[in-house]
Image: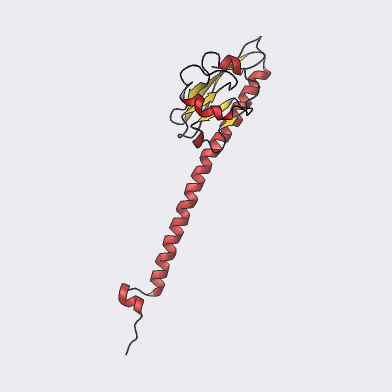
Amino acid sequence: MKKSCKAQQVFGMSFGVIFSIIIIIFILVVAGIAVNHFLGLKKCTQIGLFLEDLEKNINKAWNSQSSSFEFSSTLPGNLDYICFANLSDVPKGVYSKEIYSDISLYAGADANLFFYPRENACNMPYINIKHIDIKKITKESNPYCVAVEKGKVAIKIDKGFNDALVNLV
């Protein structure tokens, strides 16, 4: 007389097959979590590379006698704007209500560049860019925002012959 296992009676499969299926499901779940984590790192890396390239190009313009060129870069698609703001000045312009009220939390910080929405900025919602004329940049609109369209952003970097700091247009 042949003895049968209870698991085989219910599922019609041996313990080894059931265990293998559970292991495969576990591996697929862990692989999905790992892929999702690395995609998140890609977004944060793009922001870091953007900041590094922007600062390098601003320093290049600042060190020259005069300069005018367009800086283009890529950013994660979940960012809508890159904003330059003078938080010690009054808000004015198109973005003064929605964006200024959101970034005004950092009024005490030494910051002039902000990512919007700040929740999507990988814990880097603001940074201080040196050698830019923030008063001139925010003269008409404070904050001065540049749209991120399909992950692409373009900023004109300009420094006149008699200018001490770089202007962003």
